[in-house]
Amino acid sequence: MSNDGIDQGRGVPPTPGWPQQPPAWQQPPPQAWQQQQPGWQQQPPQAWQQQPGWQPPRPIPLDADGVPPLWAPWYGAGIGDAIGRFFRKYARFDGRASRSEFWWWFMVNAIVAAVLGAVAALIVTLTGTREWTTDVYGQTTSQLHTDSIWWVIPIWIWALWFLGTAVGNIALMVRRLHDVNLSGYFAFFFVNTLGWIVLWIMAMLSSNPTGQRFDRVPGP
Image (cartoon, rainbow, N blue to C red; front, side):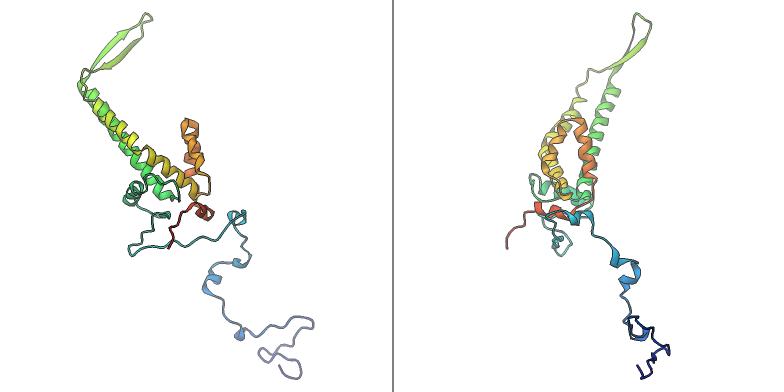
């Protein structure tokens, strides 16, 4: 600045009472992420960050293959990862489960039930005979009967699958509830159809970092 109060960088006299700013060539350029996110300084905290007891997310360690430990959720897990994770954490009710872990296994369960049901129906259709009856009102109905017992086999297989995975399914639902920062006791909603619908809606919710309070991290 010269003695006459002229900004030598631009040749413009300063405005009285206006805070002086360094010339543009002296100001550091903004960071790249500041340029890409307009209004980044005005972003308010998320709702879950304002909840009592909220803590910043704990970093999840990964091994050389990018696999998280069993106590942590696996975000972005594939179908094979979700299946393996289900059986390795079969009866673990602590920790969290990501949406990909939950919904991949849900799809596997649905496919198994659909395939076994289709096989049973196909056996009945191929081995059965259809009987037609007419009631007193003149309405004709038909029933499919079969003397074969082979259709029972896929039904029993499905029953064994259901019983064999029941504990794991409940544990997975509990961990999915933990991931959205909800109590695992909500899993008891499965006792009726309406409760299943509520649980499915809860399972669709996005992860909440506060749910890390349900993790059981082993000591060093």
